[in-house]
Image (cartoon, rainbow, N blue to C red):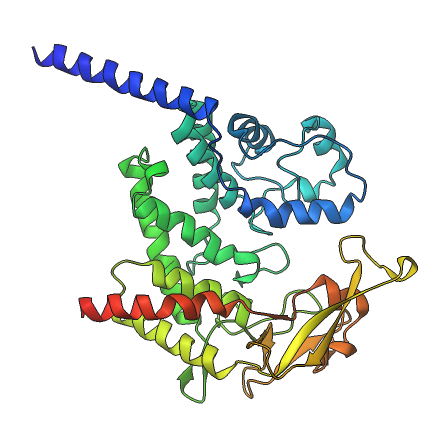
Length: 374
């Protein structure tokens, strides 16, 4: 009798799965592709002419098949491709240099493909998507440094730039918290993920920069041994960064049962964000004539103008000792005015932004929830 009940449940399960898959194919269900925008943007920088067809976001199977096709044997993905492009994958791969064929977490890569494939599997039941996601997760776990961190493309250091650390840890947190598209993760893989997540969060807390005895925020890159801020590319000198630090705080606020250390870390970072607001300035885009355009993706120049009614801005970089905002030339010279940055870097890099606004908006709700638990 028990065997018969099991068979009925099994048949019911597959019927529900089949019905849902049919529904997904017939409706306009789509999986968000925002996580691919960075990689696609970099593809576009090198491909001014893009006259090929592209999949619609509702074409889940086609996009997922694309991701599986481009996955490397190690489980990761090369960066800076148009994942929605209807192109011959072999031709695309052949056009890449050996270095750019390698798997990487850079430019919000690999963990984004894993997340998409997991969701595609939950919609379609296609086992190949789950297998690809498992291989991707194992690849990410294999990259974790002995100190608990992950590195990016440009320098062998703990990397917050391009959401390397936070992107990976958000993925692992989805698995740890049992997000619906990861319900299939078995106990062995779950335990590996949980351990890696705890080590990563512990490292984040140790990396938080302290100035004059006060905890502030984080740098783009931290040394693997000393955990001090280090430079990456020539125009990315060591400093406290408002952009990447915002991603760190949002990650920490996602943790449902934060420790006292995590709570203290978030509160200190919020204090730094409030202290580092820049008021009365605004970044404006100025159109350029055709012969002055350096890159087709940025047909404008950026200038700073005074505007008393402008909302607060934050600089990408602040000096660790003075908290003074700064920028850099392509050659690595520190400057304090946007007009002193090379024209190509003025538009091709985000020196100012409103990244912490999401953090400040989420903070009161988080603080209220935390106070209820204390």
